[in-house]
Length: 147
Image (tube, rainbow, N blue to C red; front, side):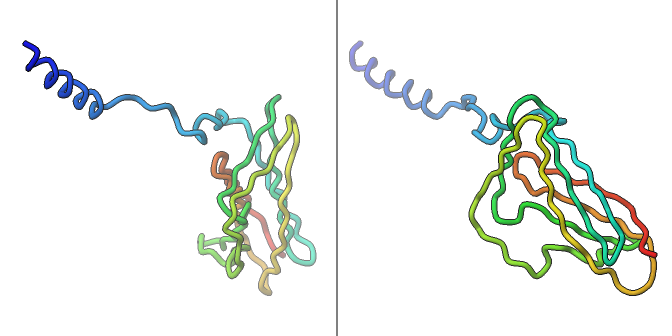
């Protein structure tokens, strides 16, 4: 009988070690807040150029941490009336490869602002404003007219 106990225990240990089991969620998933925690708004001002302001507000009563995988925290892209991209703020820029974060206190708002100098002539455009937070990505689109 003893000659069967040791091999049976060894087999049971191997089966247990190789069997599937549930794992806890990764840290980023545990920290993620339910959708609706951030409210985004894009303001467009057409004057001597076009100014974009991406405002991201923490609509909760708790602090929210925004995690960025590199130095590119935000971006703005301008599309013409046919949907073709005519300008992107990040094009041709270099960004650090260091991870970073930003804390948004309860009811706090963060702003990212950039400017675009449109080509001569008028036209209808769409700006796509993006927050590149790994745990709370945001994208907003706004149509505007250049006289």
